[in-house]
Image (cartoon, rainbow, N blue to C red):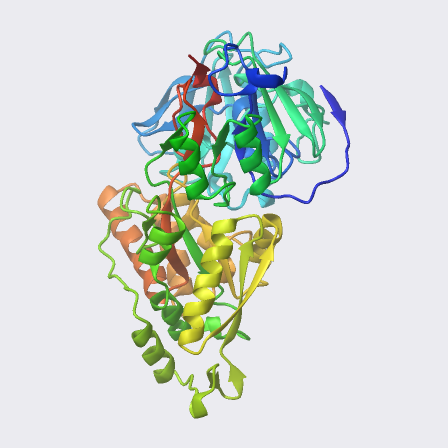
Length: 535
């Protein structure tokens, strides 16, 4: 694999785009005679470090290079690199039976020694993976024979298979790519077992992937995929209109490449199709309850923000009805999430009353309420690359102003916002739940994680109770007890209004009419490109 450094482009939106083949000219446009077209997806950020045991890399790219033992599907957990598995009666021992004749991209055999090496490499960097509960309960990995491996847990942990199915970190890299038997300080290459292998990477320009001709699941129909760095917005739309770009899907942070109206115009042209997944996540405003210096640490303020948001208008005017108004943290199609939480409808008068009762007054007709000499003013951080987040932020700012609340809008790169979330340096910020493959267990586990939502939840009075129940639900083996615990957890954060829902987001694809095999995984982070082909 060839790697070349190039000047950095300041972009962060991950938007997946297919361009037609590299030959140029009219053959790049939808409906061209050339049917073995190259697949090029445009990312507004580089694929970055493809080490699958760390987190800077593009998940869309990593998902076609690396694989896990099992796969999360709408029908439940299914075999992937493991053909079958057994679970002990106490739920602490998982025995996996591996596929035979699977090879890494560099020709190394995939076997239980490789599984043990990879999983132990992840475990040796436990602090990095604290957000994933499995990393804290996995005790040992034992090789039984060449194709049988056993994982032993310290405690029963019901989401074990779910977390083993994730895009990272429990996926497999060739042993030849390890450095001193580890991966936490870097790797020597990016050879997985997946349907595509990385051939060339020019930093901040492109990354080229070729079909794995020895892929155990069958050789992909599309032979070459290129990830090309391309800024979102007008640049992406122009590329679509010129036929240079012919496939777009919404990204892993909830940012968007082109607006809904532009997508519809492309579909109306007859050259493109629009395909949407079922509700995949909830777009939301995250409130920092632990920031004692900010008004947002008060429940009444958070509730007032919730009541001041007109979700119907957001759904209708910003998303043209393609994203439904969200009333709770998780949509009802998420396991354990349909628990009958009370609605907080759009009610600016009620919001103003809550603030007044909490001591935030605007005597003398002041535009901004005050309390003890302090203004009701907060900062709201949004992804600078997302036109919909910016538009929503402006609407929220306007509505907040009507009830005497001042919102200062700050647009930043997505990584900067993620850093703020983990350090607690924020009042309010846009975010989203992690998706069907991860929810509710991973988003809820993140409530207690320093790298995620600890600052969001740690300021509420029930914080310790919340964390105790989170620990209990992850270890529970009784389905009824688990349902009750999830209901308690979701009720606590709903009552405290620390996660303020906006809309239920889906993965939206804009693709040429002649592209077939478009489908979705249980995550918004990637698509199964290996299943696609041109008619």
